[in-house]
Amino acid sequence: MNKNFIGYFLLLFQPLFMASNLIVARGGVDDVPPISLSFWRWFIFFIILFVLNHKYLFDNFQTIKKESKRSFFLGLMGCGVCGIFPYMAGSSTTIVNMGILYTSSPIFIILISYFLFKDKINIFQFIGLLFCLVGVFAVILKGDINLLLELKFASGDFWMLGAALGWAIYTVMLFQWNSELKFFPRLTIISFFGFLSILPFYFIEHFYFEKTLFNEEFYYWILFAAISPGIIAFSLYTLTIKYLGPSTTGFTLYLYTIYGAFYGIIFFSEILENYHLIGTIFVFFGIYLVRRKSKNEIKA
Image (cartoon, rainbow, N blue to C red):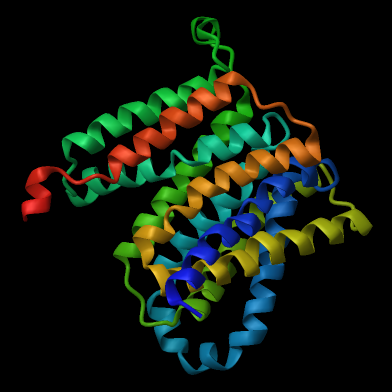
């Protein structure tokens, strides 16, 4: 079978699983408290990967120890912030909003790379950033400028922007910090530190705010969250990179938005409003500009 065909099939197929995390964020929080949902998701995620990679991990313990501080930070960002924040968002905003707002992550990646690592920004990227910003505000304000004047926003939209920022930090540092570990063993360690970083907040939530009920609904949501947007999504994402490379694979995030909107409409009877379409057009056009190279860069 043609290699490009497999790659582009994965490009279309993988976001179906990645976007299923929005189903968890929207529906799971009705049965499981958000921090508990995130903690147990990453705990099960870690257990599954540990069983599959334990021999390699024990053989490379010194490398794991050497990289532990970086792994903890990646776990805090990738599992802690990006794990808790979407589930916090799910109780006060829609899947459509969450999907669109999460596409702002590549914009944060560019800004972080520019300010921390002096990556250059060309004119297309600068204009693209402005378009994305307009698109994000169109969604947050629900097309109503009066909400800005009255300072009335849905808290879930800001939780989701926080998640997008966390994913951007995770992505940039994952790229900057090379590892001697193979992908899945490294992911095992990151998920280990991820659920550890959530543990104190889980205890606070459980004992002081909302207790976790270990019932049938709990096990359903935890297993679904660990397997569909977890193990399957990450595995297919890695396979897509193998066939298409990281730049093209990045487009999965934009398909994630589209699939997320369909999930919201199908499973939660959400309505696609005009401001969603306007915001999406601005964000996607901004992303298109951001990915363009200036004439000087092409000549170089």
